Image 1 (cartoon, rainbow, N blue to C red):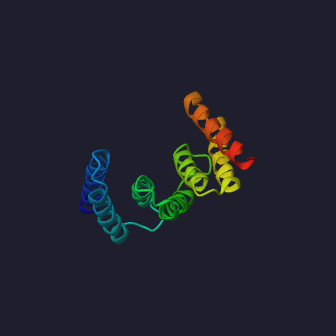
Image 2 (image 1 turned 45 degrees about the vertical axis):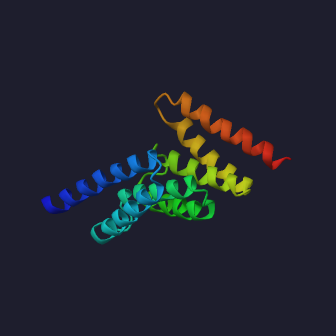
Image 3 (image 1 turned 60 degrees about the horizontal axis):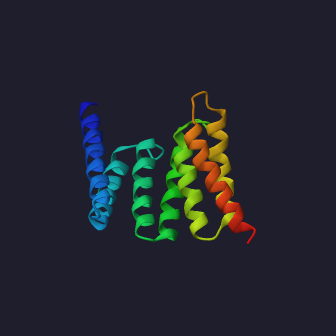
Amino acid sequence: SAQSQNSLLKAEVNSLKARIQLENGNDNSALNQLEQILENKRSRLPSNHPSLGGTTNDIGTVHEKLGNYTKALEFFEKALSIVEKSLPSNHLDLVDYYINVGRTLDKLGQYERALDNFRLALKILEQDERENTDRIEVVNTYISETTKKLHQ
């Protein structure tokens, strides 16, 4: 309906505002706004809607920036779980979710699990038809650095 489209658009605009607040260092304000947006979306959207995954991921990003890695991981894994249900397993959007989970696991010293997520991201990038050289390079760097930590 037009009303639900309108409220979804409003939520996306508010998400962008929250990201701007985050960029400007207003972390707590961004976090509060994103939590409100998520509640609003949960009341209007199916539980596996990719938009819920996006907002959940954004909340994880704020927690990561604040150094709350355990909390960030919780949100990143929840976001990944939502989008895995709604997108094909080789969808390019999944790459960033796998990287976020992997990067946070790495920060928590869970190197094996981090590598698993980085490898899933790499597999999607390598199978994609488009030119992903820069993103492949980034993921390979994560894999290399995490592998070094694993063998220290």
